[in-house]
Image (cartoon, rainbow, N blue to C red):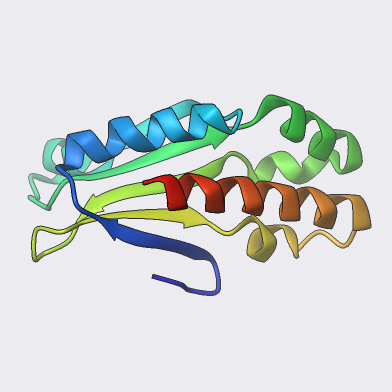
Length: 130
């Protein structure tokens, strides 16, 4: 899976195992999960709509986030880095990462572009480890 705004892949594991594994691999790259949005549960509760499992993990690397905020205080609008773990209609589990280069290209500052590149490399290593 590659789009203008993200990249990812299918993984050969259960949904819950994929969430656990991506969280572990993010930690190895210095990211903590600040938010965990269970989209499927929310839609069931609020709209009584069923959908396959779908979680959005908001990942943050504090030193890199701090550098980004120092360079561009309003960049918090684009943080944290979202990682989606979802089960598609065929039952396959997908892990998808927001591409920081795509989002941070909105900010025209060289130091932010360097940070986006660093974050992208870390997220690619997480994806490769899955």
